[in-house]
Image 1 (tube, rainbow, N blue to C red):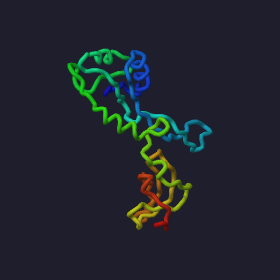
Image 2: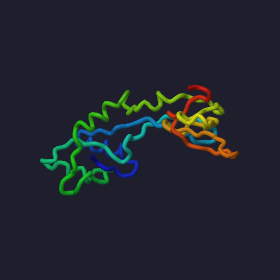
Image 3: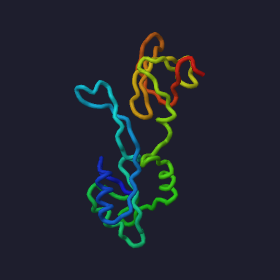
Image 4: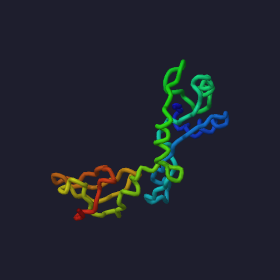
Length: 169
């Protein structure tokens, strides 16, 4: 497993592939708020590394060709030591690849999470006494809701998959 410099995973992948290495950079889709004057709270889906700062490279530890990886643009180092990096078992990478759908890691959070309109009344699963108003979806896993506790309104970030419409069981 290769550790990459900050936000340099894609560059490191390209440079390592150029050198002939078999590289795997698992990606996910993330929902980000659109920036700009006329964004109006709109969101965009963008590709992001599933394991920020890391990628996988298949190489022979016995032959020592892993030493070339150290001097590659975007690479910070290898997991393990300079004398001998730590190997990641093939089954670990295979399990990550099994979660891919259309080239992106899919954990079911977006598809399983219900969609709510701004201002919709929501409850947290398992906490029927906590009711709030849906404000916005922050990313593919989290949402912001407004709850009234002890006579005070508070904005709270919660797991999107744990929300349901108020009154639904």
